[in-house]
Amino acid sequence: IARVVPGRIMDLRFLPCSNATMIVVGNNFGNVGFWDVDSSIDDGLHLYDPHHGVISGISIHQHSFSKVII
Image (cartoon, rainbow, N blue to C red; front, top):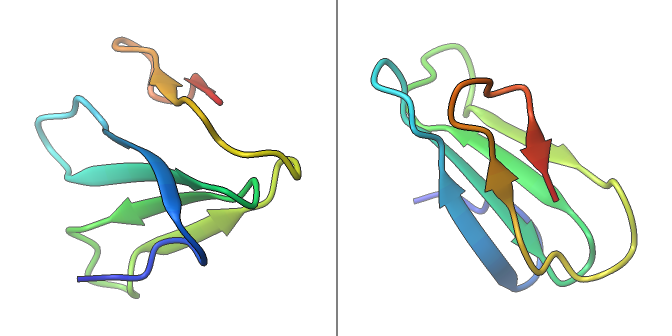
């Protein structure tokens, strides 16, 4: 269990990847959190604040994980 973002989670997606377990969440403050569940180096949490509106949807490009649309 991990607190990926502060506040209420509004959307959650799993990256469609076979070699890692990655979860992307967005909250009601505009934060986006990435959780690398399999990370052994640190807690695997990365928090970004791209804007101040509610994250109402997250889309991940199936063939290019660097393309995350919020």
